[in-house]
Length: 397
Image (cartoon, rainbow, N blue to C red):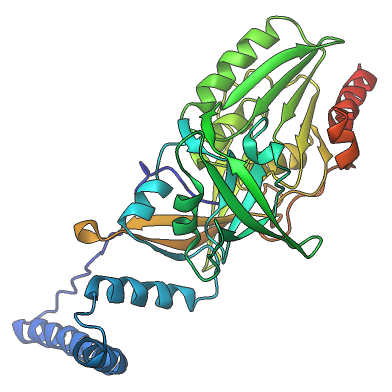
């Protein structure tokens, strides 16, 4: 998942260790060795990059269409370097892409109303937003956009494709979709709308069951959740349903705040680095719903921060997971801006594990109670997953 809060910075601290010898000559010797090592490393790097600069010079001087856009050459070189790692979540973002990627996860925008993954080979639907044009046209989690208005976008950075999908409300965009589950390709024309991003919605269901839906882990989600829980708990509910279906994730800090409302104490999240080192995050005290019977709804559109939240609740035995296997996004990407407004690099630096050291990435979470939601049920307004959650809570009382 992304540590997607642009306010969180990565501090790279270079610590110089000075070894002071007993004599002046010893100090000079140590300094010379360090300088020699640095020179050797630079010489090795120069030799390594010699073919690159040789190619650069050939292109700049001899390519048929002159002058060559050297900024695009530079950006393409960075993209190629990061693509060679074979990690779909690591890549380069030009200045505009970086601006869009770090835009707040609250407010509104104009588009088709779908949470998407721009870190892979194609612009991929994670989940359509409830009531959105994308949902009305039947777009599903896993759908890949391969053409926009008839133009082939395979091989185009998904962040750039996303710009073409967005647009003024009331205008149409025709998407050519490849659906891996069924191996079918089809066109769908969607009328863009103004999409309002509501983070938390809540209500009381029949039988004194409280219901909360979190659509995204945004900047204000934690406070919205506290307000909703305060209102619901004042009505003395017998159980609570936390709906994380089609929640594509968001900020890590927000997820920790959300988990802390339901888990009283203990580890809720483990951060694992490439060298095996781990850092744990504990639940924050003062949660408003740490004892009430709890059911969490998840599906194939539950990703990243929502998977971490559901996984912690499952590991702590704090609630029952109902639905189908989740999306499987459990890696951490640092967004590191480059100097002089040259965009940013998105690099996978860690993986998130559940409190029981379970791996989420590319696996997902398996619910305690598996309940598929068929297309026929959905068309008829029948929510079998929600019905099962209510049934479980009624049986617990």
